[in-house]
Length: 338
Image 1 (cartoon, rainbow, N blue to C red):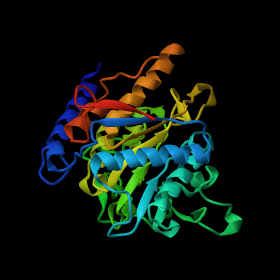
Image 2 (tube, helix red, strand yellow; image 1 turned 45 degrees about the horizontal axis):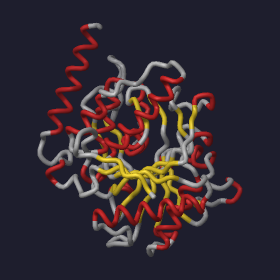
Image 3 (tube, rainbow, N blue to C red; image 1 turned 135 degrees about the vertical axis):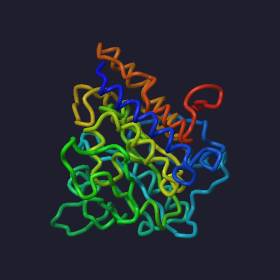
């Protein structure tokens, strides 16, 4: 192991712990980052992957979340809710459309109009390929009446809302005017009552497991590929972005379907290394959810004789340090429904 690598890792560790204890910069558990459901991972068994089955699961999981936390998923002060989907790997590995249908159906049953919801992701092209946007000839930007926002349009960033990484994002000797800044998705940090994270399960270099934390951070900001390219800073960026108070507070939970999962080769889609389970998982603790997903990925990697992803990945330690949630011990539990 080279001295340069050791030095880089020491810098990463020092920076993450320094950031974690700076007042007012990142949300901490004792400052309100926890709720009564923070240690729970709900697991719902789906009958199939059709809209009706998803709606049944979504309805039950939403009701259980509300029962435990006392927080109602209904229109509030802003009368708006957002859905963060994942489409970066193409249509073969994107957030399932019937799941989004089920979430929209349930939110409408709870008082929202379609015009008061929105679906958000990075790329117009990928959103269209995955079925969230209609054909260009239709001149529309909605999914069955729900507005669809693409971050690459440039319309949904604000210059005053950004994540600034203390690590260089370009090779030594190169520079850019804002090479340390990644703009945040303004619709999720402004006038929204809450937003729901709807990722896809896969592995990813640097981060390790690409699910809840990655979709809320790396795949949720401008110029995100710099974090994938710089593997030593990926876990730092994913946890720090996820812990930004203005982004974390309205993020109620992550809801992920195991309809489409990939255990090696991500984030590029490869159908040879996929698996599927009729399960729907919900948790307001992204660290716990990602840790649980990692166990599943590693089981499939072992079965195919691929190297496992280390369970002591910095992603979990940093996430716990920043108050995003515990992931092992008596403080967490898996609740299977129905």
